[in-house]
Amino acid sequence: MVPATLSAAPFAAYVMDARTGKPIYTQNADTKLHPASLTKMMTLYLAFMAVERGQVRLDTKFPISSNAAAEPPSKLGLKAGQKIELRYLIRAAAIKSANDAATAIGEGLAGSEEAFARQMTQMAHALGMRNTQFRNANGLTQDGHYSTAHDMSILGRRVFYDFPQYYNLFSRRSADAGIAKVSHTNKRFLDSYSGADGIKTGYTRAAGFNLTASAKRGNKRLIATVFGGTSTAQRNQVMAQLLDSSFTRVPSRVREVRPGPPPTLKQRIVRRARVAPTPAATQPQPQQLTLKASAPPERTSAATPTPPTPAAQPQSSGRLALNVSARPRLRPSANADAVAKAVQMAVASDEVGDTSSASLATPVLANSSRPVPAPRSRGSSSDQGNASTAAVVAEAKPSPQAGSGSLALVASTPPEPRSDTVILAAMGEGDVANPAALEIVSRAENSGRHWGVVLGLYRSKAEADELLMQTALQGGDILENANRHVADTLRGFQPSLANLTKANAQLTCERLQAKQQDCQVVGP
Image (cartoon, rainbow, N blue to C red):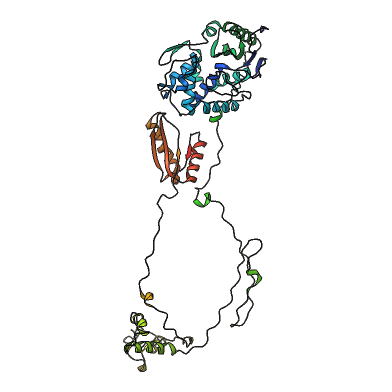
């Protein structure tokens, strides 16, 4: 079915049933070869994904770098410093296979062609393209840039199923690319083979003439890839032979097995917290101390303190044990008249002019308030009341020996005797002065709220505002003090929530990502 002599470049072919993904024909299908411009299928795949996720819009203008403008043909003819809408770059890369347009797409989406190539490789492995590695966005020959006929057929099937809204782009014979009208590089095969509707051609001297094609007949759809053709005509002829033979070998009715969603759009299972996070929950677990009950103290004499027991010493395991402290000594018996005599001596000393010591006590004693007299009986003029009340009132009346300012205690017990020793000194001028003013240190009201979340990019400010309002209402207490903001960037309107703690920002993003909402936590 395939000519024995094809080209200097190794030949490889792979045909699959697009409905099931099962192979129908293979030849050197897993040999690593130069894919040439078939690489642009991955460039366009990531561009379609960025548009659908809201990272960019089709009317977003991408700047053209000197690196992109200097790419060799085939090219659109872009100039360094020029800005052009993404829709035109996609048309030029898909239909004309323009190298400068593909490079501009990669630089506009990832910042540099090298970073974009890494993203391409990661996506390829996520899609099951195990023998593919990319080094650029256009497919020009470069060390370490390779793929296989099998992998490119997998990619062609993913383009068809994952982005059907853009797939008709690959069957257009011509299109407006902004600065020029471009024609399809696969126009001959599309016109000559019945049912063909894509996908991509490629050619370099090292790769030969490559093609990934898709065709439909009735209920059948095939996707095939050819590497290493000797010319455009020979490559198209081989592709037609492969498709004709394979259409006769596949059944008309099979159970369609669609590929899963793109890896970055796959639903993630996120465990959501049932309670709002607290600052303590975000901190490392504090050291735990275990209190061990100590033995009761032994009874000892009042004059001898109880020595510490071994239980009071730190344990070798690091746990802290508390022991009962020794009881304080009992104070010696005191004369009840000692305090009164000491106060009289201090006042008398001040009256005779002794300012050496008593003057310090005088302000304290003078400012002290006298006790309030006990209440008098209100029931002397009334016949009501009982005998017990009258007895208590009688005892409350002042005695003749008490003087005008003394008070009588009502059935009170005598106080315990206190010590004979009275200390009058130890009060200096600094003791009666006002205490020093306290320095109050306060923290900012929003201390620790330096985190936020970014909710992707949107085509209109109204759409971004609506998302912010809906998110704030659903966030409850977590987003009560959050600041809402919509930034107008070159790629679209970017809504964000600020003035959050780190824990609240992470919890908010987890809730949004569980609903398939793009979200990113940003910190200080």
